[in-house]
Amino acid sequence: MSAANEGLGGTQRLTGIGGGTIVPGPAPTNPAVITTIPQWVKVGNALSHTAFQTGATSVSNTLFSLIAGGIIEAIKIKHSTAFAGASITAYTIEVGISGTTEKYAQAFDVLQAVGATVFQLTEGVGSESHGAAVNILVTARSTGANLSASTAGVVDIWALLVSAT
Image (cartoon, rainbow, N blue to C red; front, side, top):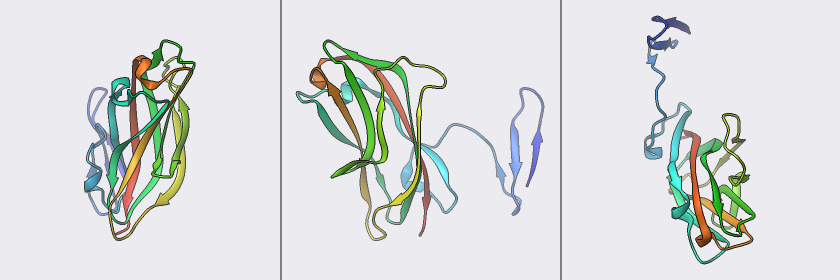
């Protein structure tokens, strides 16, 4: 592999063994188009606290559909606005499947202050079905009050995905 830098403000390019060029940019947002080359996909873009508001202390929503033969190699969770709400003393986000909501990312505290180095990166290869797509869930949990009491919070979630098909 060779690398070239076209100047301070220029585009950095990596040239692979096969001659293909990789131009760094924003993570793609469509997990349905993953290939046999691992890539980061932004599967949860600016998820607001309102997406999780319910009259209970936990809720699971579909984050994305993992394609048949898809493999999750890692999950990154980072909040850009701290979650908050009257009487809420803890608020976490996790990623998994129905019945195992922390399979791909254990509970990450999104009530804590936001910072450049405040995120969770969970590594661990996993796959679901080689014959059918499977919904990957994001689960929010609160302590002290129902999720409907939340008044602030924004989180982004990325998945390192690859296809084995």
